[in-house]
Length: 389
Image 1 (cartoon, rainbow, N blue to C red):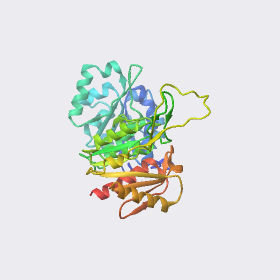
Image 2 (image 1 turned 180 degrees about the vertical axis):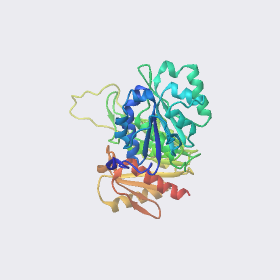
Image 3 (image 1 turned 90 degrees about the horizontal axis):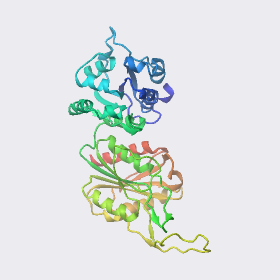
Image 4 (image 1 turned 30 degrees about the vertical axis):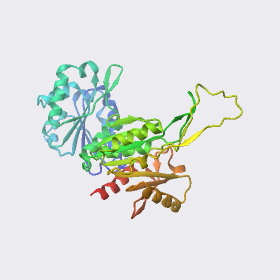
C-alpha cells in the first residue's frame, strides 16, 4: 500500500474519503477506484451494503484500501467517523432513494445521512431505472440539497458507472480550494489540420495532452472551462465544455469569440503556421513531384493581444538549449503582450505523458523538472494564481 500513496499527485494528500459501495455489478470497479484515489494521496475507508458484499468480497476491498471495510454498524459507531468526502460509487437506485427519504438501514445510508462531509454520488443502474420518474425525482431532490452527482455513461441500455478517471476528477474538484470559482478559463489544445486534397492533410504531432491537463486543472479549481481543440489523441473530459476547431481559421475565430469575456486564456494548441491551397478531389499518387502552395497563417495570440484577460502562451523549439528557448520565449512574451510563456523542447514533449518546461514572465524564469503533464499543469496554475492574487 505504501508504495502507491501519492504516486500520481498530492492533490488528495491528508484527505480522508469514505468509499461507499452498493449493490451494483459496477462494484467490481471499486478496487481500481480505491487504488486510484490513494495514488493521488487520499486515505480511503470503505463502507459496503450487504448487496455489495455479494458482488465484491470485503477481502478484495481490504486489499485495495489497506483496511477492513465497514459491513455493519457496531458499538464502535462507525457512521460517526470523520471524513472530508463521502463518495458513493456505484450508487444503486435503492440507496439513492433511501437517502432521499432519510432511511438509514445500511452502513452506507447511515453514514451518508449522518456525515457532515461533502457527498458525491455516482449512479450505476439499468437505463429503465435511471429514467424512472420516481428515481429522477429522488435524484433531483438530492441535487437541490447541494449533493453532487456524476452522470453515468450510456452503454447497451445501461447507465454504466462513470469512468474511474471522471470520478477521481470530481473528487479532486470537491476537495481542492475553488480558487477560480466564478472565473472563465479558455484553453486551446491539440493539432490543427489543413487539407491538401479531399484525402490528405497537413498537421503536426501534438497530442493535445498538455492542453487537456490544463483544462482539467482549471476545472479542479472551480473555473468555468472552455476547451477549444483540434485533433487530439485521447478522450476529452465529459464534464468540460468543448469546441471542436480543426482548422486554423476555425480555431482563430473560436478563440476570439470565447476569450473576449474570459479571465484566463491558455494557448497550448499546436496551431499550424501555414495554410495550404487545396487541390480538388484526390491527387494522383503516381506523380513524380508535388508542389504545395503554402501561405503564412495569422497568429492566434496576435488576434487577442488587446484582450484584457490573463494570457499564457507556449513556445516550443526542437533543441535542448535553455538559453535559446528563454530568449525566443521572451520575444513572444513581449510581441503578444503575454503574462506568461511556457517553453519546452518539442522532442521531449510531443505525444508524451510527461513534459519538462520553463515558465517565463517579464521578471522571472522558473524551470520545472520533468513530471507528468498533470503535475506540470498544477505548477503552471500555481504560478498563474500567484500573479492574479
